[in-house]
Image (cartoon, rainbow, N blue to C red; front, side, top):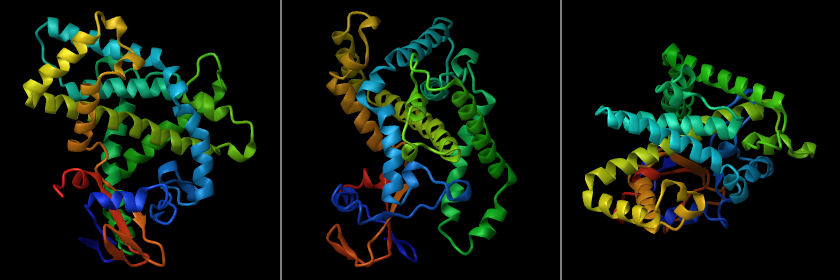
Length: 327
């Protein structure tokens, strides 16, 4: 379906393989424009293959299986903190907004994993000013993404944007920059590694990130790492509550696999097949990233889902529709 003068939205599952497979991904370039100052971009919007490879090389070590297993103690610390907080409310017979509490947990966890310091949401039983601002900014970024697609009307649309929208995003970026500055001052910190330990330990200048790149990467990690995780978990709980039979089956799998809470860890939960299926299905039904991944057809054109797409046409694949279409 044509969604813009030079854009086609395709919902055929085969389009994903045609555009995003390792064989074709270099043919279909990203169409996102720089999101930072002076043309600085972040990993998921970088068009240049060499620059993308440099960013990915720096960050991949922080997200390796070995690195993530090394963070298990922090994951358990914050998840146990959530359980204890919910127990307190349950024993008092009080209800809670579980979506907010999942937010508190994921923001605290990402803050600890990325910068070695929690945001303090679980301790305070509420959003901190920074987290509340980030929550709002994440939603409002969608306005900028849409405005960018309507050149030359973009400047007019941007002037029509409420000042609070721009202020939220600027505040989010400023606070992310402050986090990075404090974290850099601590050094690589080999004894208590976090994500930034791997970034700061790069010895080759060609692989080091600039100050602006670090700040934009931090801004992305905070928002994308916390909000999407919380949304996925909230969606999973919602759908399980709608299906008591499935909820019962999941509870049986977990309770039969562990005798005590202390047995639950990253490795042991990897064997819970029904839990994994529930999470995968939740991400299909309640997509944490609903906006499309824009790619542009190569100048010679290409076949996508059995149809020839002329060169230069943008093709956004939107998860929200792609994963729900009965084709």
